[in-house]
Length: 333
Image 1 (tube, rainbow, N blue to C red):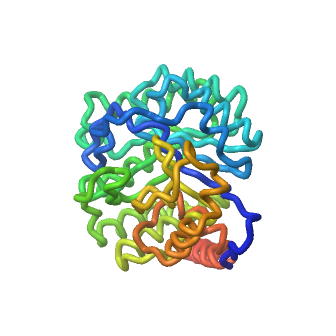
Image 2 (cartoon, rainbow, N blue to C red):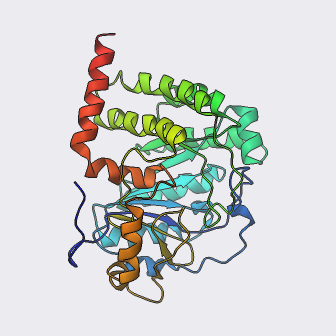
């Protein structure tokens, strides 16, 4: 059921924050690394965010390029002691990532990290554009495990270049004993600074994603089972160019860029304000935000986990029924 945002009583619980646009990779599906702007958000600026936040994805650029990333994480944890932080990293700065994560998990043990691996050795190298990209990412995953980081996953971004290696990377995650997540390439002149990405062919995406769905359905794990809905949604979105569920961006989530501009997500290009200039509450309850919030509910420009998670929770009965039906089918086939 859609939440009726008619009074000033609701504040977001989920956020994706680009803490920097600096990046030490040269990915073919993303031109963030060409952005030379300075990081305008200081650690103290993160204290302006609401205490309602429960899940925050810290991304970039490469978030661990910030020398004050531990302080940023500490300030976010001050907002809400139960907050879950999720770092999205390319894994190239192995020693720095491990040391930062060891420090952060001392005051926030719920902190997670996802390391991008977009194919096996040669494919990952071609996509990421950095020598030894694959070896560095694998080394970081292994050393994070050795350091006791428990919430750890490999993140695969599927496109025309690498969809055929999806099953191999999924198997790699299992061999390393970490979770597997994936997304599909999207175009965004606002965030990725690119509009020429080619999605995988629908028949290829369907073929390879369904192999992962069938594997995930073997488990009696709520998170893995719900993930199958998201994965099958990737196929539906590619086929129909329509979200399987409505978007609730600016209802329960937002995207904050490295300059403090607040957007519905990292796809739409309309900012509703800057937290360095206005309070989040003033931005959140403004007429401009409400108009864009209404638009987002009918938007079909993406099927990305940053907004899908809330869509699933807003429609949990419908999603659970579908997922359980799929699970039962696998038990009798």
